[in-house]
Image (tube, rainbow, N blue to C red):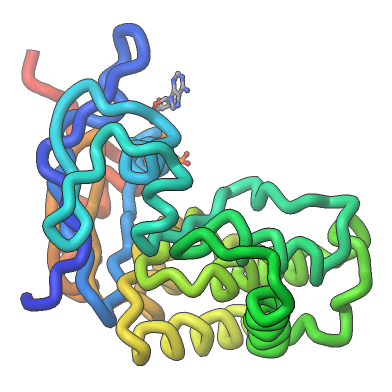
Length: 252
Ligand SMILES: Nc1ncnc2c1ncn2[C@@H]1O[C@H](COP(=O)(O)OP(=O)(O)OP(=O)(O)O)[C@@H](O)[C@H]1O
């Protein structure tokens, strides 16, 4: 596959005696959605944290368009065009919807922007477009804490959109969404991939994975067990057994 924009090579990280990530080699491609699938505790979120610099790897490497990123701080990785969302969303709950989105245009901007009027208007335009695209424009002045569940999920996506990054790492962005919201979420992802954004999606709902992903990387116990197109991976009975907790007993 061409257009590889991000690659990890043998990333590893232990917490005490627990090897949470045990040599993950993964590639993300422009215009493609890669779903990171695996049972609870497989190491999916930790893999994101190692890529984004939220955690340091014990060993291994990662690069964005050939540029090594190990050891970079989260803001430095963001400036290379990576935007990420968190399972717990990490919104500024007592700020307005619009302020939450504007904040994302500051922290993840590609280069330092002076506070002049033109730069400020450009950021405000980006925020307005992100609110429009996520259906939140009418709620721009509501406080994040007052939003309904699905609206908070879309606010997290508006922050991603406003960052104008071309690599998105999304940690369970669609969990708990009803069907209509899921369809809207799918449109957002398709709009982004059409612009060439590379997306990595952690997702437990296999219907969502089937709907939205071009490729799956299946993680278990910190390792990528299989990678490929969704149909092939999801039909594999051995992976299904691991996913649904029916792990074959290891030989004594
Ligand atoms: N900061 C930490 N300190 C200690 N252990 C951790 C830490 N972060 C993660 N772990 C452990 O590492 C393992 C992998 O966790 P991780 O959150 O990456 O899994 P996951 O695949 O994202 O799981 P889930 O699908 O439940 O979110 C788990 O056993 C978890 O308890």
